[in-house]
Image (cartoon, rainbow, N blue to C red; front, side):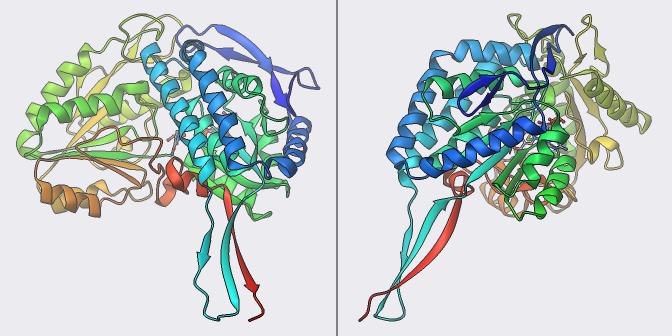
Length: 474
Ligand code: NAP
């Protein structure tokens, strides 16, 4: 169903789209598929709602969000199961995603009360200077399938907290999780038009959202390729934009690191979500002296990971989102093997009927000319590179175009600080493979994006600054 102006609706054309379970290849549901007309209606509903929503107090907006969070908590099992069924991640990981999604709502429920302005010291005694922070207006949000609940709340919660109204277009492979989240908005009694959901063909919906002068903000999470196109399309109406795009994370292990902690870190950042994460490790740089031992130990543990349907108990690695994703992984592995990479474990599809599975794979002797070294694999493949010294690894770790997340494991404090300064990434984890929390800014630099989500920075993305100078007469 679509959700426009507080109403659950079918598409006017009667169109629907089917939703598949990537673990079984089966159709699990079908949902209404709207187009240009529904998108325009949603924008107009959001524009109308903005007139009153922007005047609601921060406390009122926060109370609505707190109610949404409590409803999500009540329905957490149902939302998690929906995520697993439509995108494949193992149920415990889906539960973690839902907890993360709720964290964003909780955090912005509080932050709604803190949309502060500033006073600026005047240079004339007869003036009073102020900076107001006001909501941008109607925000359009476009989200991917890999975190189908948390990517939504990470955008909508700060938008609503700031006083904006929203039109969301989720990924067509995971509309059911979006519907579940919107059910909570509906049940929380959010005023009509404040949050709208349009599911359907990307080009049609995207084109209306980017071209509309009534949409004042576009927030996108997805590939760099699509992000660049949306940026161009948004230029005509000079929208405020934030872009959370692709990544190619290096994971650097120095000889002084805690090897076991580093291995656990790679297992977590590489194989969680079957490697389909923007901050997933893509290149593992290991100091020459420990690389063989590291590779063997990592492969031993990766080979133990249980692949299968995410609804089954004990499964660590679910399917990839579809067959094309499996083909991309295959092409990266084939290219690496052709260029003398050695497969230490995995290296092929995992045969499970009609599901789209690939075995957790570790490749040794990777080098910079392989496809896997520059393109996002978005699959469970861990290539290991070696390096001689700090200077060399910094140079190689800094990717030409991507700059989302980087990880570094070392027990040398000074080195940790040097790496933190030199790595050209928006997020750096030093001895920490999970540098994401609701209260901190998340986002990339270079072609990994612009703008932040999470924390105070995430709220500022939905606010416009207005300078006011008041002449006081004397
Ligand atoms: P994608 O192909 O770029 O799609 C993302 C969203 O954009 C989907 O809803 C998609 O709908 C939509 N879209 C595609 N073409 C569009 C168009 N012309 N107009 C409007 N919308 C359009 O990316 P994905 O494969 O879903 O997600 C994986 C990518 O997202 C990876 O590159 C990953 O690194 C990145 N990502 C980044 C972050 C971050 O925070 N930086 C987080 C998660 C994922 P359709 O599916 O219908 O095309």
